[in-house]
Image (tube, rainbow, N blue to C red; front, side):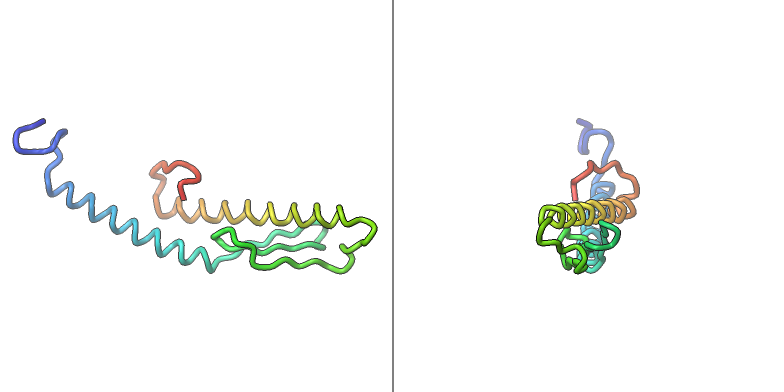
Length: 115
């Protein structure tokens, strides 16, 4: 350790600047998370018979099922369509979140799934 300082030549001014940048990024992340709650993605499957809308928090907000998708003799098909639409909506929400986070972090190499 260098005399009277931090290892690697870091001084208090650099440390204070780093702390300010971290605080600013944290504030931006909180704001972005609030904005992502308002943004939505839509997934449609089965030629448009099942549609799912989710927000950036991966909450399912709406499921729309067209009457022609409801066949009492083939409930499993409807279940599969709903499952596929929900999974696609969650995948799209993940992509939206990652895209927004990469704008904020500026390619800092944050590990996937960190947010």
